[in-house]
Length: 436
Image (cartoon, rainbow, N blue to C red):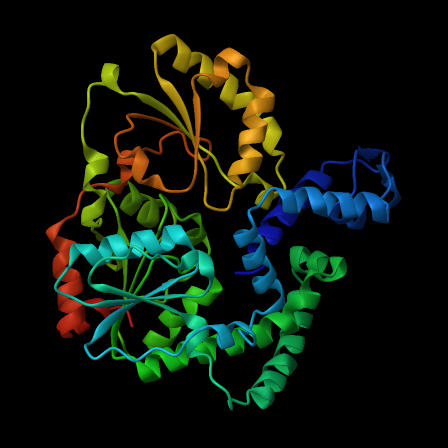
């Protein structure tokens, strides 16, 4: 889960390098991940046109990067990097009284996951839910009346000694790592030093697992609904639920989850928000059809409002944190935004740039100011990560999948209502665990 993006990129880089002949030379404009990987594959046939940055230039780079984010987000990055085990944060998180009534656990690491989980909770108002956020961005103050919100840091306890378990797992990791080096992409990760962080990640993982264990020990958890089982820290409750024979359901907080192409679901059921997502999971990703149920939360129903195309007020561009994949954001925006702005002007509409929660609104606004002309900017609006403002949008432009539509979420179905109720009452054991 931590290194899959690097492994995918290394596979692409290796296929690219395989096309080079023995006398071919490659020139790159700057150092970085791709340069390091290609150096490993091509040796002295790779040439850099610029040397590594000086300490002063590197410092300026980090200052510019920090300036993109508000202070609250910088603080969250700091805590993620230097307090992964909640050693400090737990002192600032008050201990909460356990719930008195049975709850469905909603693990979350960031805001869109929380919104999707709470949308499902509103679908069944007669049930009680407990949303536990692993970090600040998962916290949602305006939760539903049947949802209690807590911080995972408040469940961190003293006195749990996992050093022997850690040492045992570390020895097994060293054995596995030697075996994995037979895979070219893993061998490159090792040579590039990316796997050196694994011992730290393992230690943090054990600490976070113990915090989730304490959630299950102290709270009357009767089911788990996870809207992001690709995040390792919110995937842990699904594994713990499976081990404790507690029913678990997963869904995806976005449109389509491409990680099902290679990951294994440990939940009893995967909820798809419509036929398109169900088809993607079953036909494209190979998920067994009997493991997928169609059922979108009731809050998604406004998305399906039909409107006359001539009256649609927006053209919506769904942006992404392209930097995560080492992509050049400015090139994306230069290619896509000017023609979309021209289309908006021509048709009398507004161009709405809808940002992902991981994107900096200030930095993206600066790019729009830089790229669009004065006339084009008059038609553009830059909005943050809250998708509720776009329920009325009719036309959608998504750079990942041109077929993707806001209408994908579909409408709430009675099948979801029945599925959650049955799992809650324990009557779906034969159905939910039929593949065990």
